[in-house]
Length: 206
Image (cartoon, rainbow, N blue to C red):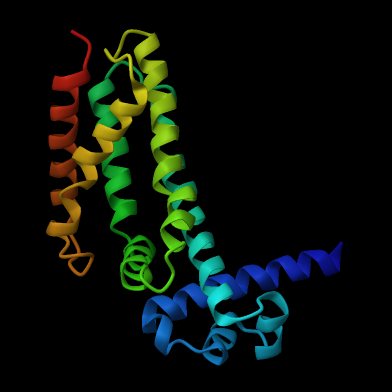
């Protein structure tokens, strides 16, 4: 059990170290020796877990996307019991999603995806399966429950979730200048409020 646990911990350290180095230096400039140093393991240990640099890159991107997804799904939790003030709860969730979408890991993930997609055409599917598609599905599930209790008026929760995320995240690339500009928290809160206002006008119960 100890040996298995140690191997899992080393693999996790390698994936986190690899993502840090890839995010900092880009795929082409990153080397396995630097990744090993970042992870605190020997270079041969990296190869024992991953056969080559390209495989390591794919697995590091998938792991980062899953971490981002777990954080965002956790941010949806208030919708399970939104209380009397649905607008306030939606704004809380929207603000949390915006903060997560603009944090360092999320921005680095998108930059690496955009820069390497031509060299790794399967990368989009890897990241989508562990990220945006799953988030939309999780949000649709929560919105469907709100519709069943009469708090939203929608017969298509998937479309409703898609439009909520589009309203919320659509302007971010321009506002953050492709992730190179940090948005102050008051601006994020204003964006969250504007999103919820438009969303409730379209889907809120009368």
